[in-house]
Image (tube, rainbow, N blue to C red):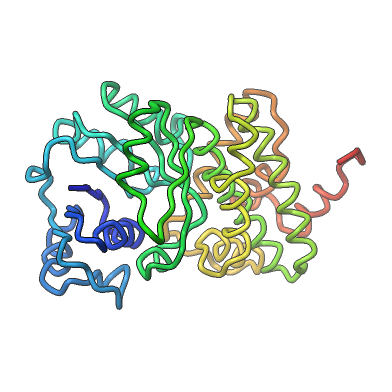
Amino acid sequence: MIVVVGAGAFGTALAVALGSDGTRVFLWGRDSAQTRDMQIRRENARHLPGISLPDSITVSSDLDTIAPESPVLLSIPMQQLRSVVCTHAARLSGHALVACCKGIELETGQTATSVLADVLPDTTHAILTGPSFAADIARGLPTALTLACADHPAGKHLQQCLTRPNLRIYRTADTIGAAFGGALKNVMAIAAGAVIGAGLGDSARAALMTRGYAEMQRMALELGARPETLSGLSGFGDLVLTCTSEKSRNLRFGHALGRRDKLDESLTVEGVATARAVLESARKMGIDMPITAAVVAMLDGHLQLPEAMEMLLSRPLKEE
């Protein structure tokens, strides 16, 4: 059995992909009315309409029935990860825990695996990340992800458990690089969206993505990440997808920011909290993060996009 905690779009998509070959999957959601509806209708009508749930998936709001030692995929928004794991710590203890969220905890500046280590230090911790959209995974479209786990045997076992014909899992021990690549690309996607929303064009977006990638490396490498991780799926690959596809929630949020539209604060946009958390850490460490700083200034209303672009373009000339 594989357990997926979080019955949103991405958690449901993972459950569908993993259960497509008959593997038993337990999909947990906190809303008991929603999980009952999903179990009866065999569809997540709220978050992933039109996708049928394989018979091998059980949907429930009760974690007490999960099989011992089953790997647990935590498809929970980053800012809610700690509270969910704390609430269910007794039930999750003894399971390999795989975070499937992209972000940095606002209050602590910690990555997902660091949060898991704080709450359940004696369990295996990993992170699953990379260029992917829920609808693509659920439809069985080819997708490649990075699984980062510092425990090599456990990482290899998880890689084998989670790989499917159209869901290819690559493995690394670099949890720092995988986490920061997935988190920082959301910040850059907001900036890229703002550029397009303001009508500055694709050339400007390409320039921003390139400098944004350099900014991602600057932060992650200082914290101990490996360069090859940032150039792989969880860094460069995810940056390209999130900054160019209209399916990206962070990109669409950036569009609204660039057009000066009213922002929908009810949406979970991971890049917003991540930008604030990363900028705070960068300032303490003395790391220059101009694009991240510009995003935070725009979010706080201290800077409009024309002013942000002028600030970025007026930086001292230097070699690439």
